[in-house]
Image 1: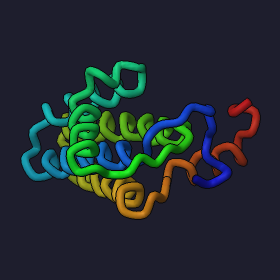
Image 2: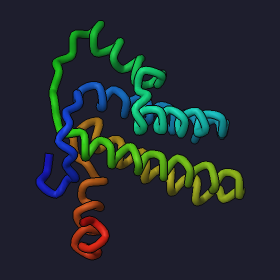
Image 3: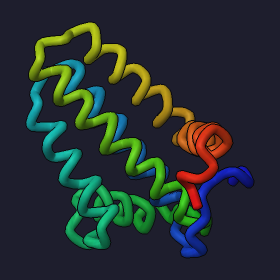
Length: 147
């Protein structure tokens, strides 16, 4: 994890987070193929459940934990700050996709979806947090907003 990532000094399993990311990528891809906006509503609900302490109610979290146990993936603990920031960005991207879809802005849907898939793929495949880089730049530009 890069030094510029927000820290909250609470540990979470990064392996489970990466499996969560795989489900998010699958959901966004399914939406882009089917244009079924219900997928995005369910994704927003799932993000909110995980962000606000109701992980036990999150289908994505529960499926990820099941997969980790069944496939015996290793536990890799990391600070939850960066992952929490990424989840907030995920909610933002998903809501932006919904709005663009409802406004029939097809180009915007493709651009937002593509950026979202790129950022999520960077985390999934390389453990690279684009959100942390954005956080670092924002913190440099607006230092008083992060005190």
